[in-house]
Length: 97
Image 1 (cartoon, rainbow, N blue to C red):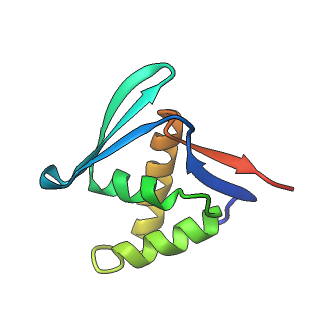
Image 2: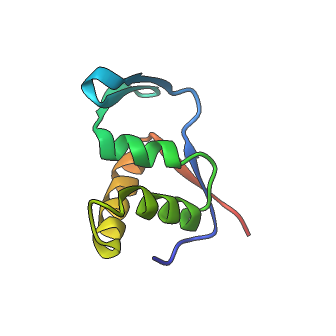
């Protein structure tokens, strides 16, 4: 999975509350205000976006889901998850030279 240079991180000022008993995570984005309920997969991807490079996020994601799906399937799920979280304003890619 070829990735741009940079790192994925949470958008500043988010409020994050895991809801373990519901196997989900609630994230409040203040600007513009919106509440999100992340399923387990989205929550995992969100947590992996901790300032890590795209390649490191992908490696850790593949390792986390290896028992449930193939590497190709994992890459597809990760691409979709990253896009959705980015489009919702919950993560950002900070590019580096």
